[in-house]
Every structure is written in C-alpha cells, then in structure tokens.
Length: 377
Image (cartoon, rainbow, N blue to C red; front, side, top):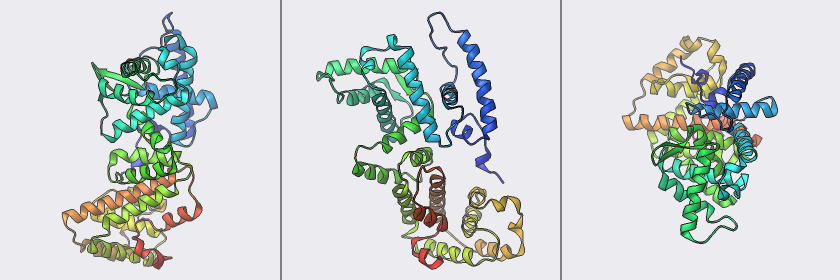
C-alpha cells in the first residue's frame, strides 16, 4: 500500500512533516552552505542568484530557524514568519536599492499586495501571468494607499517601479521570460492566496469568500490553499462546516448513492472489529473506487499494523461491496465525496483552532450523510 503522507521531496509542506531532528540537521547543513555563499558575495553585496525555485524556500527555512532555533508546527505560521523576516531583512539591508514608491509601502501593505496578486491570479488559474496583468493588479492596490497620486499615468509608472523592486529584491515574484512573471514557488502562490482570504476586511466578506472557496473543494489544485487557510483562521468551525455541507450536497440528489452510504454507515457501526467505524467507511469507498488505502490508514493507524483486512469477519463485507453496481457518473461523484471528506479531515488536522463540539462531530461522522448522524450517536 502506498502512504502518500510518507512521500518526501523538496516541497516545504513535506519538509515540515519530517522528524524535528532531521529538519534541524538539514538546516544546519544549509546554514553551513549559506555561510560559504556569504563569503563568495561580490563587493557590491548583491545576493547570489539561485538556480532553482526551492532556493527562496530554503532561505526562509534558514531565516526562521535562525530566529527561533526551531520550526513552527503550523505550515501557515512558517510561511508567515519566513516572509516577514525576509521582507524585514531586505528593507533594512537594501534600503538604497528600493524605488522611492516601494520604500513608502509598509511591510504589512507589501504582504497585502502580494496576497492580492496571488488570489487574483490563482483564482484565474494563472500560474504565469503577463507583466501587463501583474502591473494592473499592483495599480489597483497602490491607488488606494494613503497619499497615492490620482493621476492614472503616474500610478501606472509607480506600478512598474514596484514590480521591478519586488523582482530585484526578495524575489517572491520573478520574471520567467520577457514579459512573463510568476511567483517564485507554487507554495508561496498558495500561501498568499490563502492569506488574502483569511484577511478579508469584514466578517461578511470572509463568509462569502469561504463559501466561494468551498465550491472548489473537489479541485485538487486548491487543496493546499484550504490547508493553509485552516491554519490561519482564528476559528475554522465555519470552514469545516461548509466543507461537510459541500460533501453531503454532492450526493444529496442521488437516492442510490445515499442508500449505499447509509447502508455503509450501518455496516461500519455494526461490524465487530477493533477498528474505528470511520476507517471502515473509508475502506469501503477505497475498495469500490480502486484507490489506495490512504484515508483508512490515516483514520485508524491500527490498520497499518494488522493484516486483518482479509480475515473472515471482513470477507462477507467485501463480497457485498463487490455486488454494488454504480454508473461511471456515480463513481465520479463518490470519488468527489470521498476526497471532500478527506479534505475535511486534513483541514481539521491543520486547523489553528476548532471548537471541541465541532471537532467531535466531524471526527465521529466522517463519510456519514447528514440524515444518519442522529442514528449512529
């Protein structure tokens, strides 16, 4: 069985799941390499250009570790700390290299500007965007800052200067080719998009933003935005409830799927086995959809240490599952329902704060349609 949670790579979200000792050793090695690079800087003090997109994230890892001698457990907090330290260092060390316009933008507003650009482009599916597009977003933002000129031509000139400063200094947004830009790493694009939602100016706008976001719950490219957002919100109760409602809405109009899910819930509660019923519900969908047992394992780690999946008390159950016949469309809906529930659990584990009643309600009712909730309590 493949366990995706154990897959390692250079992606920061993966690095954050590693053992703390491994991360510490990794960082110390990176610090040593950084010290060598520092010694090789030119007399002008320019930072050496990096040959790959991971370099900025590695720099942030270094900066955060140097600041606190440990890493935040929350990915969202890591990005927040890293970006703030990065921008502060640039502001203090390279003040003379910034444009006059960029100098007047506060640290908070710089992050807000990057967040505004990130959500606009990410929402449109634009991982790469033209210079004209990004300068337009910059113009929209800086036009509302205090003491901003009202002349449109001056605002346009200012937006060009701001983009050039961002590119030349911290490199969060970089030029990929002539007239084409992107965030230097997809992880940063996702972080700033999530930050823009979390920092909605009013409770009403935040609610609407979350409602709009949850409509994207079946789109895999938004998954990290959901997880990062859960780690930013003061409380994730509303977001988690919306995801649960979205999951149930996917199957609500199909009586055959509802009948199956209700039957599966009753079976999972009634079966005599030392495993969580939620894990059995996940297992049944994974069996029908021919998926790896990732979700079932995540819901109940005892599965990882017991090969009881083939024992007699499960044999009849799997035979019944084999008799379930679904259309291609119904299987697609079931897959969306499965992944939306998985997203719900992942958001719960990444959340900064969740009230105990909501946490218990979600934990006890994974892959359970709303109309079955009261029956299994």
